[in-house]
Image (cartoon, one colour):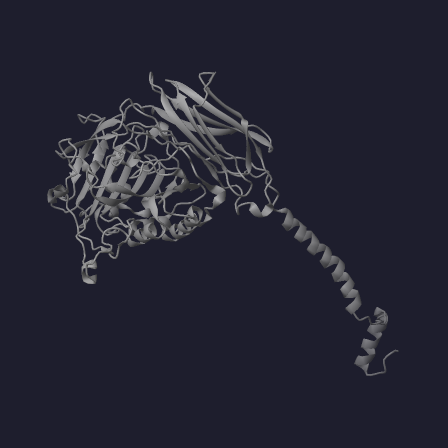
Length: 607
């Protein structure tokens, strides 16, 4: 029986809190932004202090905007270009992992100084911000857009927590403006447009794999009190990420792949890695603490993990050329900041590895609650490239990479049971902190063809029942919408919490099966709480055996039918159309020999 890899979209987004509390200012929502927790390390000075947000400290580019005015100003004044400010920053963060692998995280940040969601505001010119995405935001009234394409699974136990997590396959979640009347219609059109922009199969997103979470997501930009009716979330775990997705992603950059850090993105190297994820995040932000002016922020991130063994290297040594088959020769001319960071938090005295060339510049940033120290290479300085005008960072391990650190929180899930009728989904969440409990918001989206028995839902911690403080369950409708389960659970210190629920497999129509029934579909777990930062953890996709028919039977029936028709009808048709003739028996051999001799002698033949 073929295995049907069923996509129980279990995005295990485990969000946990620290003892610190965020500011009460809702306009500057840094605490709830996972990407902001990285603090865009480029905003950190070399002496460890955070760079100021004052407007006079930024290098701004001008952009033209066309504004409709209702006062008595002339038409020429209404079309006068207003001074605008755009900014582009690029950075590469390299983190040596305890497993000996290397983690490279690219981040490209484009700031677009405009607010076209205001009434009467029209945008007629694009300079740094890609026009294709700007038109999408304007046409479909999108407030926030988050999309990712991932190949591979992030191994939390070996690599720790990533800067920006993402599930295998494609993930898309969008906040629409509260003026949208038909959210489902805009969502469907938006997925079709994004499918063309990124050369992906996002057009397969429909109501059968779209959910509307009520508590698991908040806007990462402005608008904390956004109504969840304007939120849509969907995943496509069967999406295969390839060069066709990377090429349009690179074209969104102001310099493309011709200059700057993007020249390192060689597809044959990126896709020959253990993990590869590219994402696009768009949100409205404030440009100052008073939020007197607003802007749109576009963050393009690309995370890749190079494995020490699959890379074919015999020794633990990494360099830009060995990772990407290229070196850096210049920064992007349009970038106000272009830097490379190497995480040396666990290597303060250089006892684990050494960097070449060395740099005296150091920076500090708070990443996921931990203060990290980085060696900084500024690509805008000529001395960074040396006399050869080429920058090739070399990292050479001196000895053992050290012991692996267990992450505070991680999750996994599996399917139990036997047969093809019923089963049980187990989600296991580990809290490895010795004395602190964490609130976790678990979100699970299950396809409609797995019929959940919600009365069998159990949550246990340390062999005791753990009653959720919040439960939201939306049952599925056959061929219309999936199951949606959200629970707020308190994880005790140093504990393992297990969530189980039983299900029954449904019988699909033969036309509803995918072209490859052994491929996958998916599942999710998110978590969220008011805190100084949160962590989102995705579990692996599940492999669920569904009652799959024998798709070779139609072929066998066709072969058998054709054989019967050929034998039966062919014989009957042959009897009806063949003509019969009587053949006289041939003379014996002696008579034929005698006639041969008579012919040679010229005498009459025997009759």
